[in-house]
Image (cartoon, rainbow, N blue to C red; front, side, top):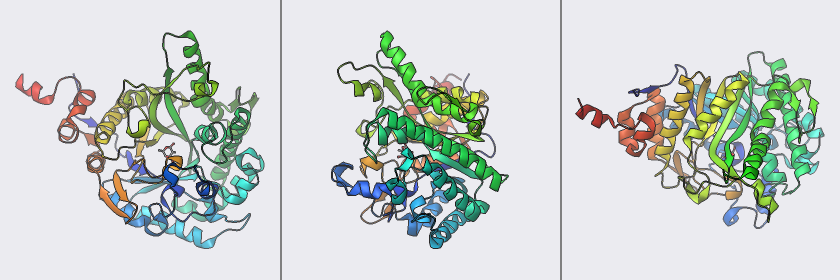
Length: 450
Ligand code: FCB
């Protein structure tokens, strides 16, 4: 027996996510700006540049989001704009963000605001960035200002976006600023990010009673590369712990476990009101004895469906398993990012339908998922990959700033508007997803059988 319609809970939040540096344009006062000026750092020598020009025209895209039936949007604030120099607050930047957040509200798009999404003011980076424990208090001071100035417009706060990804890319792989390759440094940075989360959590609640504060955690669905290898199984277990588990234990139980150290951190105990889950792919880990660093890099299941430039495997079931797993946090869950690079949009409809089916399945089994944010509303600056990876429901021509809604954008709109997925919708947008979404028998076949 298969349901004939997948309905989502009343009041479910449907939206998309973006981040300041990836969409705003004109951010020349952060560490990414400097990084982009260094030859060889960004694919094809791209620079964020004007990006989607949101500093000037975010509202036009909010109109589009609204027309596409969305009722929420997740964005981030750019610290380097708000505090361009230590202790100096830029009133015009605060005013612009007020406008932006009020603009969301006017369009009935509930704002979800991320306080740190990968970019640091140059002056903070120069003092050592997240390697320096002083950054924790600098971040708190910034958070305090933000909540005092903008808190009346925001209830959903995300402290830190993907602390492990940040530490991994910037301090282990070295492909993001500051380009370090050191395990101890990566661990230290992760520890500081988690401590900063704890401080921010307490602070926001002290200032704003009704705030809902979460951490955004990238979760990879981890499996051993060679399942019959004992070593790979052990190693995948270790990587899962390192990659997925340690931060969750830290923000729920308030415990740092090796290699984060061994300590109880009272400020971190029960320090999330919700968990933000970013899910993109399944990752296979195995030991490479010849090139040790390779063991730290996730591999893709090449037999699976792979998105543009081998970004990831399309593995919807992984989202379900992760949701079931994180249910133990005992907190509401938002899927704060989920998406894929797919310039010609031939996979995205399938991706959206099959992932949402897994979300629905988890909800049926009692997982308290409250909302879903697709990454992303529109194509944007994809960090070291520059502009070649296209994650948008809306296509952007960066030479002209012209927008074109992709088919998947219209599909997503129908889901947002009806709060449901029907076989008819699947048939129209991605019949190849019918089996995955509604089971083996096509509705037409069912009809024929009488
Ligand atoms: C996530 C980031 C986000 C975006 C997507 C594709 O790891 O949080 O900024 O780059 O990946």
